[in-house]
Length: 416
Ligand code: FAD
Image (cartoon, rainbow, N blue to C red; front, side, top):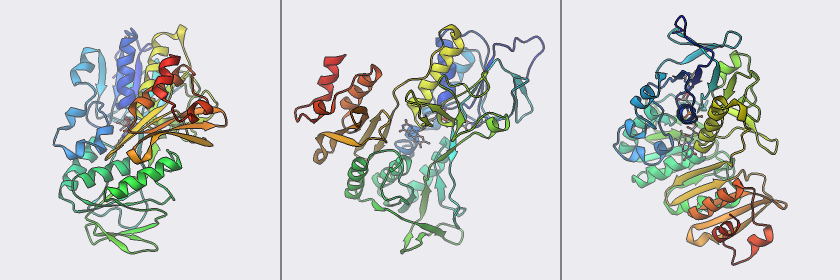
């Protein structure tokens, strides 16, 4: 609650106690910011890591606290006024206030929107049946852990990163697993055709059935899910149906405040929204790349690096910088450790180093002569080398990469 006499000008209010919210707090203090900070959450727990939710967490019996990025004391010790279960409802940009669900009103000097994304819902009959679930939060993961431990036949709708991670996890737990994907290939939005094809083969070899171009018509059952019906095929029996069909950015509070929205909360190169006192970062923000494309990325690296930049710009406004970090992402799916450095979707050519047959290779991606980045399977050293090279603007040429003896690690070592 705004108390009389409080210096509100310098207060940083962060909406969203997730990966980006946590990192903003930590970086503000690391950068020497001494003003008041409020962190506003709505999940009833401090910020935690989401990546293990679809990988290890559902297989184990560890408590959600094991995922926390910091203990509750960390926030108290750093002078952070935290609300773990009191969502921000209204931003009044003119008055520079945020109103929470409880009615509390907090004044800000800087407002950081780190509201993340929520799962896209399927609108087909049967999604409300018992035994149909999805995964975004630790609470979802606790439900899924309980269900997956008892399931025999699992159908996953959606072959994106999270769907395939859960599919691999369910398979490792001994379930019969079928994945249904509407597109002609898996992970089609995020990785190259070569990588899709390799992962498709590996998942199939691990015993996961995958249907591409699948049109899911409905989920069948009286009160519990019993099967998934395709519009042009047989019903697939299921005692657990997991929906992983992408996310929508949480933009509603920003939109109601009059901020520009463009596939996320639109920000400029320094991550400011159309109101200069309000910044947006992480999964909810769509930002211009140094090349001028507008992108919204869903990754820990993006959330954390954007938070670091915003914190530095608030703490040291005279040294304010634009966002230019090299994007990277990973996904663990059974025996596939996928790592992507750079934004590679516009590649016209991919040069392979390593061997697909060994399940360990990297694809160096080019658009003409321009090096876009590297997609790696079980080659972490290539991934690290690519990130280091890209951070300094260095890159192998196509003829370097085509040399059968080409070694990306050695190349990076010679250049850095
Ligand atoms: P979030 O971490 O989602 O945090 C946003 C928070 O804001 C949430 O707690 C939300 O409830 C809250 N919020 C929303 N609106 C309000 C409001 N009005 N008031 C208060 N609070 C609000 N990334 C990787 O790089 N590698 C991986 O392997 C990987 N695996 C993943 C696996 C799973 C199962 C999931 C769900 C995600 C995974 N990700 C992975 C993505 C990564 O976790 C996200 O990109 C990252 O968490 C984004 O951070 P964020 O702070 O922007 O959003």
